[in-house]
Length: 144
Image (cartoon, rainbow, N blue to C red):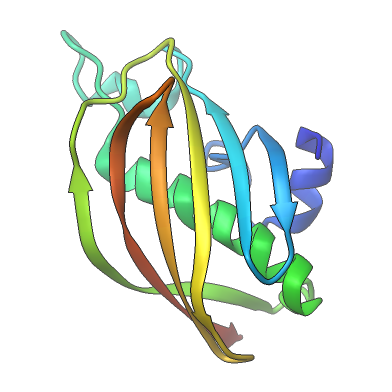
């Protein structure tokens, strides 16, 4: 899936789109996505100016956006203008290595449990073969 196709599936816009490409997608099961971490991204202005590290919240956002793409393909829902899967809880998230500018982060997300109104996923962010971050995220369907 290209970046333009990704934008059709996500509610987020610049500067918060954290998925550049979908590498693999198996509806109802899993997704593998890619995020190129560029040194000129806005979060690096303050985190940290002398030694840039991708914020943990941005890594969680990348995993969550990947899960959102998976959910929309699995259920066909979430595409309405006032409907989305909102992050409800972050569980057992571990940041094992820093993600730095110039890295290519690959996220593997697996659905652990899913209903029409909620979901639990496990996400792993890797750079090359090194696990950088891993944990579980819970989502709830919201209509505003």
